View (cartoon, one colour):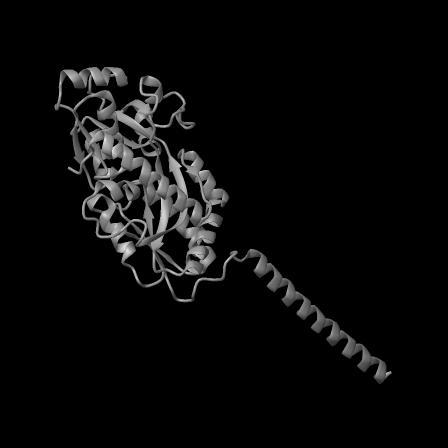
Length: 338
């Protein structure tokens, strides 16, 4: 009887041990399935993302801040957003190019490629000192006017500008930014003269537009749309060749007499050229995963932002195409830094 009891006790312990081992294996398998596609970020090493605009003053900043909490969760380490505005984004991009800590990245927008042609004496080389990580997203722009301006559409604006050369002003969120580029392109195509006033970010420029201190501005459609809907700004045209899905009631500039007029605002991430390729690939994987989070997709869709994603090589091709495109238009429009 004692032998039977002993055998039963040993069997019970064996079953319990087997269950513990099986449970441990299941937990490990679940952990592997839920882990990022890349290896975990080194313990104790914060990731830094430099944004070359003021905090809260650009769509680039908001896109980065939507994505970085997800990246931090996957990487298992904090992601610090560091705003370094100024000089048409040159200050922030230069800080990214010169970072040597191995964990600093930089958010960039159209000005990153415009400045290669437009800006003189850049302290960095766009393609030699930096490398692409990912093209995150893009959105349409909109030309908006202050409510008191006596124009209701683009043709009325052009007629008014021709009767009052040099009396109108348009703001931008810095030299070499999309807003500057679009303004100069419209001036060249329409044959009008409007004074350019650069600001340190979209936020300050938008504040002055709402305050009737400037007359016009090309801005990111998601940021301007609430003011347009509220009647605080008047939309004169969007900048895709077809109407923006988030504002189908606003005509494009292309359909109002300028069929080749097209601009957008895109938002990407770069890294110093010295950063190892495996680290770049790791961040690319984390960012692509973050872009597919349901909450992120919902946030972007509600604001009219189109998610892109993809490989570093895909973004590299986009950068080269944008440099060539802006170089041609800067040359034909005689666009200059003010």
